[in-house]
Image: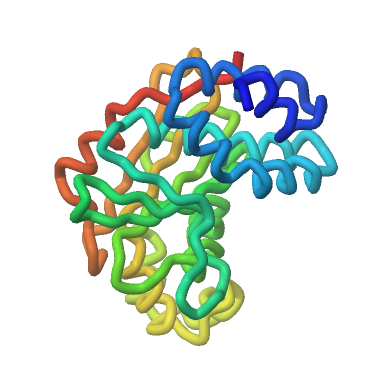
Length: 230
């Protein structure tokens, strides 16, 4: 299956701008093409299930993250691997230098910069998908400019203050229950799709993470260039 045939198979002549961006990704990163071929049926089902432009944009966030990861030759990337307990897990699992395994969950939102409450709510909602005993990275993609910092640590302050009602609303049994999941989060990478932005990403590290990001992995995440739409 050549490059154009693979794009046509996945997108079925839908979402022309995104399919052309995917074609560009295949042409610039052969490892991304191999990845897409391996998961072509799953990717095709995802595109078929997208009912509106926002859903397609969310799918592109996953596609472009795979392209981004596969630029690093030392990353071996799996897409939506099954967890042992068969519950829903992260979008990606990657192996780095053969010894380091880390999981990546990606989500796309609009206007995440408008208020910190929205950002912390997103983090809370994604914690349940992070496996225990591993390095876990949450990637949040937004179509707007990034804030100057991420106040994810405010969640920790709420837990230390035992704001039980807040964590019950977020789906946790208690503030202590929240902390068990919070410690699974190694970091949050906030990135923008705005190619003209002065800052394309913002990496927040969880100082309480049971499994923190290794320094060499962190440097890659801070410097590896992103793919942009054509």
